Length: 219
Image (cartoon, rainbow, N blue to C red; front, side, top):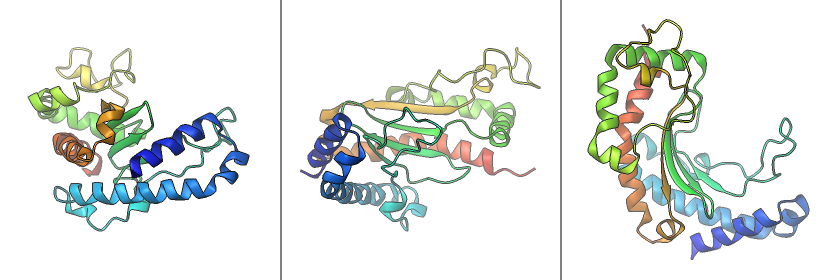
């Protein structure tokens, strides 16, 4: 019931994305948001079994603002027509993300466009023990669910200070290190979806830990 209510609200918002519409349907938004916070609490309860640091998080600190930042992107819709969940929101943190948008649901994670310093630290980690990362990416469960790193944010040439014949040059060329698993609308709406989210987190966790350890490393 709650997820159905959310999807109906988001679908209607997509059709009429304006301040006038939102003002008229503000009560619907608050109800949808309350339902989403309930969902997020279920997610946190499940994931905190595997990462105790999540146990103290409040759901409202793991979701996205409904307002888009349109100052520098005037063609962007005024409001997001999706909800999101990321328990690791913050600076220099890996992300584990659920995108909740009718017709475009997915689970993703990793580090998207890390700042230069962090990207360099990740490349140093790959240079040092890239085989460990490659083993994670080639793990049968990981491959079955995520299929490897996304291939849409890669240098055409080798990064500075790394040879083109480096054994892990394919990994070093990534400017973002992210993975994604698309979800059907039907699957997300099922009552046991939280079980799949938990499994997706467990499968991704070694990859996230590798990236976070690289970023946190101080020589």
